[in-house]
Image 1: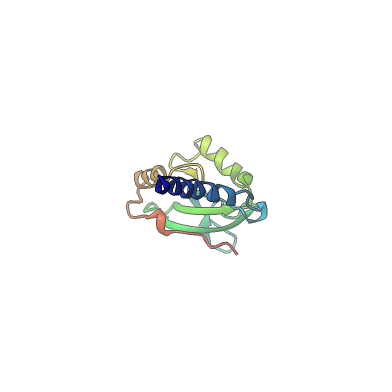
Image 2: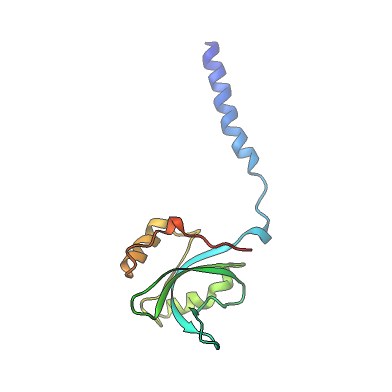
Length: 136
C-alpha cells in the first residue's frame, strides 16, 4: 500500500513540475518566423543571384536548400522578425503568378507535408531535418 502511495506522489510531482516551469513566454525580440519557400531567382544590381523575397524588409537571414534544375527557382528557408514579413510572398503565391511557387510556415505545417511538397516539386534529395538558418 505504501509503495502505491509513493508511486502516486512521484507521478503527480513529475506531471506538475514541467507544467510549472513553462509559465514565462518567450521574449518577442527573441522569436523568429520561418518559412520554407520555392521562390524565383533574381539578379540584384551587381549580378548576384538570390531568392526574390530574400531582401524583403524584416528578413533576418536565409539559407538556400537546393537549386531547381530549371535554373529559375530555388528552395530556400527564410527567417524574419514578423509573420507579416512575407505578406507579399503569400499574396504572390495565392495569385498563382508562378504555378511552381509555394511557401509553408514551419511552425504551422508538419514537416512531412513540407517534405512531400518539396519532393513533388522536383527536389528528391533534400533533408529538411538537417538544415538550419543561423541568425546573428
